[in-house]
Amino acid sequence: MRALPRSVHPGAWWLWALGLAAAASRTANPVLLVMILAVAGFVVTQRRDHAPWALAFRMYLVLGAVIVAMRVVFRIVFGGGQGDTVLFTLPEIPLPHWVAGVRLLGPVAAEQLLGGLYDGLRLATMVACVGAANALANPKRMLKALPGALHEIGTSVVVALSVAPQLVESVQRVRRARLLRGGTVRRGLRGTDALRGIVIPVLEDAMNRSLALAAAMASHGYGHTGRTAPRTRALTGALVITGLLGVCGGLYGVMGASTPGYLGTPLLLAGLALAGCGFVLGGRRVTRTTYRPDPWRGAEWLVTVAGLASAGLMYLASRTDATSLYPSLAPLAWPEVALLPAVAALVGVVPAWLAPGPPRQAVRP
Image 1 (cartoon, rainbow, N blue to C red):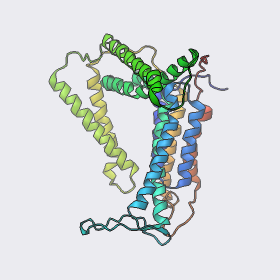
Image 2 (cartoon, rainbow, N blue to C red):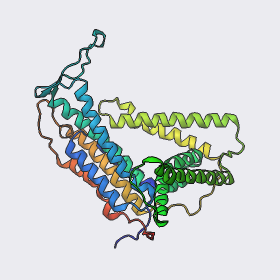
Image 3 (cartoon, rainbow, N blue to C red):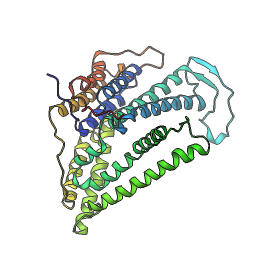
């Protein structure tokens, strides 16, 4: 029986996307990275709704393409001749002796170009996974799931993330209004016609939205923290900051293959414990209520497990058969894909079929 359409908890989508990003960080195989990228894109097309932020995935794909191009160009400009297969030679620019080891242009080898392509594709895939989370997760619903200690910071982040989609929506609304009044809409922003007809109405709409948002935040008591002792506030801040630093160090240790053991799981668990204590203490000074909190049901567990399984299987593959995750550049060889890494890359597509679809919205005329 197919699940009824409903919105999946935004936290589940973020955990799923972070799992895919963690899996992509442990490999430089272009075939696996393209598979992860295709999985993220397919899930986004199947499970996103019609909200303005759901259209942001294309922007992340463009950003990823720019990252790949920049990595390849950097390998060409800053000496890409370390290799046996020289493709072409550019005029080398001489540099002073005090910058020994750095070369501008010169011979360009296939090994260096492929190395830059693989590294750029890995970073672009991780960026696309984060873009998939932004396209699937409602930032306003994510604010309700944050702990009380992060309520004010979360509100600021939600307001910042909503600026670009609201500007796009304002431009579309202004263009639609001009067409209804019998005006013409030209492509691009040229001349005073675009300034008077699009830019100024959009800025006016943004100012009205800002004033309405400020009034709403003031009426809801934004910034009111209650009575808390200064020593308690200092202890809360120290615990949260120390815990988050520990989490960052632990994640670096878990994802890195050559890091010491104490920088992995132990540091991650210690950081989570300290940050959790800080959130509990900080939540006592913020009193807030939640209207109709988002449920966490079987679909959320399914989405989360799919992302974590992708990261876990890729981590297991890096420990058992790391050669299949990093193609050989010296000598050059075609990338090979083993069974376990392929399963790790494809298991993330499960939410595209088993997770409930978004609720249908009425189409505006």
